[in-house]
Image (cartoon, rainbow, N blue to C red; front, side):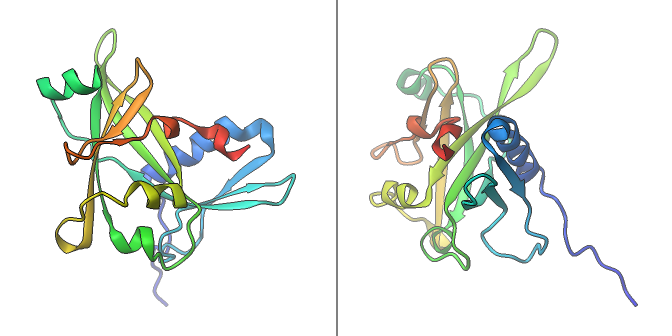
Length: 181
């Protein structure tokens, strides 16, 4: 008999699950992980144990890279940094399993008192809102959407600026866990 790792925990999924649990713990919610790692498009299931409503969630973690903000980015969006995401069109418009929310986890590098630290921000976007936001966004090679999501933590603003001519305002979704109330 062979034994294989049929399930493994993704770090970004664990961070989002922890944040959901922290933000919603007094509101009757619990976070569950699908046991089957092959379950496409669903990373977490959020359940309100009081009213029995459940939500399926796709988690996307930004690629952490040393992005030194360019002058034009800072002039346009203020202080902050960006995270980079790539998503297949099919995962958004024709997922194999139904998705209720996309949660984007953006890792920002900040200067702490002694050393650099990572600050986490979350975009919580209902799937229909996300699809509507993409109506004018160009799709790239291999049926992929690229997102450069700028987070200005001081002003609490967020933008997708991958296409400078078509900037998508995302501020209403920034760290918005109240959407589950």
